[in-house]
Length: 405
Image: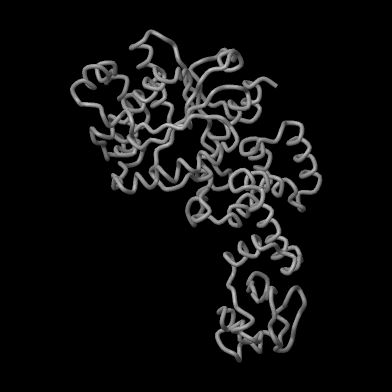
């Protein structure tokens, strides 16, 4: 399958400055994708466009990944209100974290990692306005969607924020000169900024370069941007969203979104995705499609070992598997998700229930046990007993306690 066909089938092709597929199906070219370190982690909403770029890599194109240490000091334009300026030390920390993450997503693949701080910070104002600012037409810029939205809602925008699109255009111009970049990839909300670079290069060099966007993924049931939940974003950083909760996020995918997400967030080939969807649709209750999706994306972001560990933890909590069968990695993952009590310190089941706040008192713990509401490793117990670990106490349907040695 040609790259253009692959992107169309997977739902990546949203906007482009070209209609001829030969632009991406022909000779190898160099493209770039940029992300500002406005947080110390990417979230799953970012992941879609990175997966789009992975397909360019697989097709033999060259990739430059940009972390915007310079542009982050201004802040990208939003259609609601202006971003608060981040402290410089926070930007530096975020930049380091994002650099590590993008390197992990493309582990084993050849790419170039750059930081626009390196060429934006030495710029002086008057030469920049003469050389770059004169190439931008205010009549065109004020027709951009973000500008009209901000004027319409009465919030306006600062001159600093307005110049962000010039800086991003300059990034493309710089990378075109230094790395022969001829294609910029971004999310569809970045379309205007991408065009700034395309036009600047045309005016400064007379050469034609291109831009292409991936659609923003929206949760079909809630209408919210993908990866945004009531508890906040689903992050790629395991310290912000644990691998277990990351895995559970994908496992909770609604049936009508499984096929779309398999296409966008995994590198599985078409024939395998078709087979997975067919098997899933034959018995949706088994959630086969969700399990394949969760395994593939968790392995991509957190590695195969961590993915296996959280799959095993899921089987212990909801599938009847014994805690004693877990590896050390899986036990650590389980301990991060449920209350933990020590068999050496809390010697009885009653003491363990109280220590884990599953019961308010010894009396309540005894009543729960006598009423058949407590199980140890899947077996109902109806009287207090000595604890030994590793084991899993379960109260009711969804309260778990890990007993350690």
